[in-house]
Image (cartoon, rainbow, N blue to C red; front, side):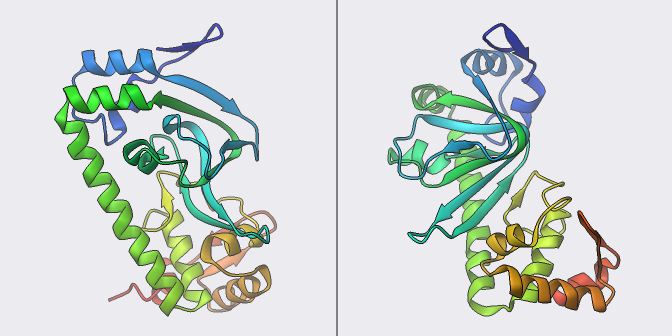
Length: 237
């Protein structure tokens, strides 16, 4: 159990699903659980501030977290959307630097936290944790390369189509273990995720709707034809 201020959340099963800990036995998982602290956040509340000292490894217990970078003009770009079981601030934990990204809660969210000292001790005693970390970080690096390629070489409509498929779990993208990331999303939020502006995203969505790939409704986007969406995303064979 994770306990704090008289409350308790059972996380044994969740910890076992986190790539770092998936290969550990139940006794070790129970020991890790006792080191975890939790934090409950409201919609839009800041989880991490970019550039601040790193205090440890975080993971989502419930809800969603968006990792963001902000320009000096205040424009935000969403780097990743994370759901339950996804970790974040990993790089800062391992390289000893400051928080690499900012993070905000999407809706009511609960996160777990493991201190850097406890993560280091786990790696020292369980080499498989280090191997799992390398595999996860390598996978994210590959996804990041794909995103850079999208920004450099693909138009906004293609990027929006790829984002929607990523939300469905059909395409590696910024969405990680958050299948409802696009269930209720504004055009401005989509723009922040695909590196564009709201007006251009609106035109892209209209193009997808006219082709029958999606239906735009008041509070969400409905996928009508996944095959057509894949064609727009340049993923169909």
